[in-house]
Length: 217
Image (cartoon, rainbow, N blue to C red; front, side, top):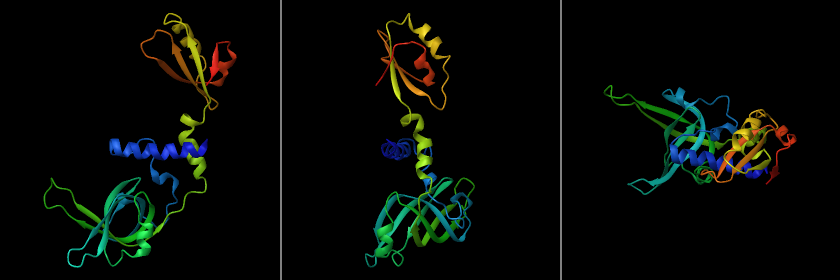
């Protein structure tokens, strides 16, 4: 089940960014090895730097004078993002093989910071890439993801049928005695005649010993 969980977690992060503009349940960089010599984007200072991140909004453009290709993209890490340019002389075939949408990379290059002319404007910050290489995944990648998705994918699922809304308060009181723990389960509550079709609970697996009519699904 873990490979499906990993795929779903990565898909969930992409959906969060697309819908909200930021990540909620983690960051794609959580599972990549960051080089000790690399700076965080939020600590940007003008001059030569190495930075790590994930490539977003990757676009290939062409220079007007000779139609030579170059790349423009955003590099994101856990602290921020920066507009990045890879000019034609650096945009070799080898670089093009690596530089893709969603790639996790370390870039060697230079920050350019233009100070805003007025207080209401922001500084213009760009990174000019000279070289890059792919990052390696952390050795414990599977453990990291397993923790991230355990709430959604690491639990067994059960269902309890409640015959009426009147009976539900008694069942709910029982469930409150079985607080969620590391061996918890997902419990789907189906209340007959209730306008909300189902209620979902996370409870201790010890609830299975109480005598309620709970079935696996």
